[in-house]
Length: 273
Image (cartoon, rainbow, N blue to C red; front, side):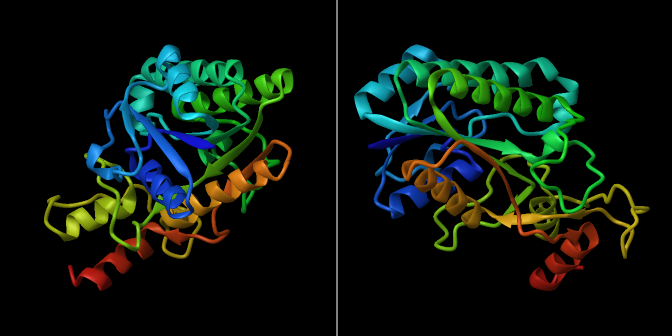
């Protein structure tokens, strides 16, 4: 039994590959390296450079490696960029996912785990956000992910593929063994931006929004450590292997930290002003 990890050279995907290997699983990685890094992949996991929407390539990988499960991380993820160039997001996130799902169905892959996002909820007014909150995405990024969720649901109903969709909020941290981390160039994640500023790699950082109804006026976000998130994906795989029905789950800790709290933490840890 081999697990195909798409986008496995990226931030979350590379941590997932290490998690799977640590658990004794057989892994093959598919990544076009548009934002990922080949050095992030351990030698024990073959890296094939290509797109998840390349059906001929994916079909050959499934057959060659005996793939029984797919973990799909490959995607474009920058919300402002999706607003500026929505069609590229629908091509990469939605069209490629449609092709991947179709290939999985034709090859009779048993399990599919999809890396989705809390952006499908849009500006939800309920806190904490539950899986039953209406999905009202406010960006092409969120819409592209939701479309993939819908396709996966419908394909599963028609063909018997079982899936877990994981919607997560803000991912942070790095592998405790320092084998992987957040190396994406030009990343917009708050913690990475704050650390780059503290290291002098950025001249400054801007805080947008200081009038939120919070203690310090800045937005509160729920963060999850990338290693915990990788374990959640593995738990999803075990759940499906045990016969679990298809399900959608949010991933987070249920409590958050404000922008200024994060910046203050970075100041304390780095000694930067």
